[in-house]
Amino acid sequence: MKAAIRKIAVFVEETHTEMDRKVNPPTRRAAAIAVIENPFAGKYAEDLSDLMTIGEELGELLATKAVAALGIPANTVESYGKAAAVGENGELEHAAAILHPKLGAPVRRVLGNGAALIPSNKKRGGLGVVLDIPLGHKDAAFVRSHFDGMEVRLNDAPRANEIMVAVAVTDSGRPLPRVGGLTKDQIKGEDGLR
Amino acid sequence: MWHVPGGYAMREALGGAKAIVASTKKVGGPGTRLDVPITHINASYVRSHFDAMEVGLNDAPRADEILLALVMTTGPRVHARVGGLKASEIEGEDGLR
Image 1 (cartoon, rainbow over the protein chains, first blue to last red):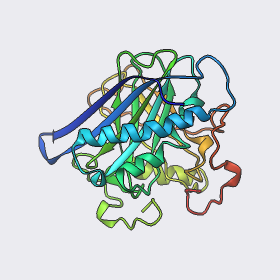
Image 2 (image 1 turned 60 degrees about the vertical axis):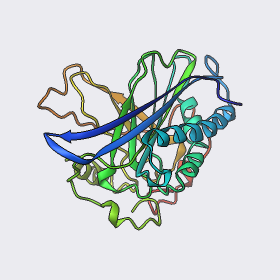
Image 3 (image 1 turned 180 degrees about the vertical axis):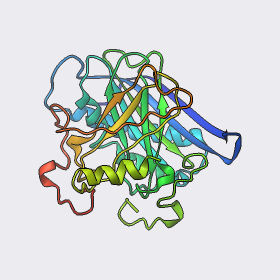
Image 4 (image 1 turned 30 degrees about the horizontal axis):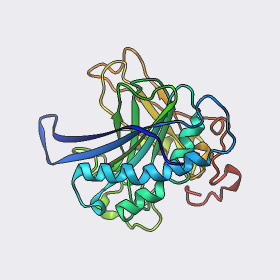
């Protein structure tokens, strides 16, 4: 099944100063969001494979749009995350079916790599619900400077029979990171963790 | 201030949990909503346990405050049915599978 998309939104955030200190270069992150019809709204379905296929389609679409919004080569993306908000007639499991089985592979294909788990969030909510997309380094989940989150919101989504699906990418970690831990230049890149 | 106590200390309190503690962060005013990501404590890839919990307080955080949250669960999502690694299949060596 193809996704029935009502709208797509793309947000880019650049942080230029933090506590009056220059952030140079500015940290940048982008989130692409698709609002789609939920084919299983209002009823229980045991087999959610249609949503898994939709997840595969949206993984490619949203990763491509988010990278394009940053305007950088896809292989220079540093961290990523994904999230979904299901409208009130849907089920949390509908978000899981979109996010977990098939969305990750096309995201990694767009980026050229990505050994780490794509951190994720899911919730049910009404119009204007706030969605936090967790962020983690794409090659090594323990890189501490890149643990972050991006909040997104659309005033008119998700409607009761819709699902809002988001993918976020960055070209950097947090502004002015200084709490130690594994740094990105120490990544071994073997297990997706360190 | 949160990655060390929120991760290592909680894993210790739970008896040596193996997986990375999923996290998120933001700047916000009173009433801001926070989605706390949730994963299985011993293997990050257990698909039935990818979840999240929304929390918030109408009067926090004030301008000079920080709101910190830890979340724990007793099980998977309700009616989890999208396959993937199961909790019963955890090898429990690397925190991932």
